Amino acid sequence: MIIGETMPLINAEWKIPSETESKQHVTFENNLLKFDYPYDWKFTETENSVVFYPNSQADDRINITSIDIPNSSISMKSIIDLTLDEFAKNLKDFTLLESNNFPNIKNTNHKLVYSYKDSNDSEIKQADIGFIQGDKLFLLTLISSPQNYYGYLPDFETIISSFNFYNEQKKINQFASQLAIPVAGFVPILGDPQSNITIVEFGDYQCTFCKKFHDETRDLVISNFVNPGKVNVMFKDFIVNDNANDKNSTQAAEASYCAAEQGKYWEYHTEVYDNWAGERTGWINPESLQKFASTVNITNLDKFSDCINSHKYSNLVQINDNIARNLGLTGTPGFVLLKDGEVQSIISGAQPYSIFEQSLNSLLAS
Image (cartoon, rainbow, N blue to C red; front, side, top):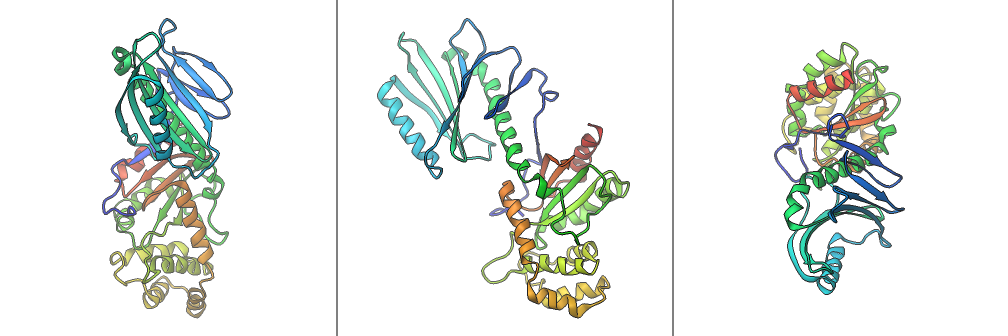
């Protein structure tokens, strides 16, 4: 389930760009910036900026600048308003051509496109893409003559997209150490723990599309990748279906850890999804959770019941949920693919088996 939506994400997977995927581009990296740019462009670098020149004989260029923001809570709108005011005052024949969010970018961002005349009375067309990340504003700027502008746009968008992807990778890999281990020592990994490829599923036991993945795709992934020892799997909770009247998704997640106490984590996990009966319909309750425990042959049902009633594992559920939200996941299910402890890609939604097959085979071959 996507928070606030009723359909799965259309974009099945994003993955970190690499030089092999973009053969006409190379990667620039310093302590602040990382992105792909055309291999034959020249650049100059200062402490907080890089300027790229597609042609040494032309004034056309792309600038990437890091600007400290004194107040980390400052809004992108306030920056845009200030920017427009300054341009309107200082640029001759200033015309705003476009002002909107740049598409397909997760982070706070905005795009301005405008024209003006320079000191030589030549017409200039300029596009600015601003990203706020933490206490910094990253400004990516294309400056060119109007006749060259559209020719440079594909390269400019490559720089923007790769910049965003690399920053997403950096952000996500801050949590890689938490992703790569089970939420607790008594919660087992499914598959060979020695495998260097891990699927971390973030799900909610009431989620419609989690159920769809469970019914249509999960068994194929397990049969073809997990059972042969190629890949292992972990499940972490991302609670999206709790509401003011009940905490049924949290309750089911807590129950899974109570089952894990008695060595039945994955059996219980499967049993809950096998008995799925909709989102927020009341099918998760103390009686049904106890029944699931009995079905999977949990031996000490009184201990299991006491465990649920005590909410002793509420902190584990919260830890998982915090990781999902810090990663920027927007719905369930979400699948983070790790190799050698580093994030390689994220698959969003209940995608068909072919998406998983292609992504996992690519990781195995690399």
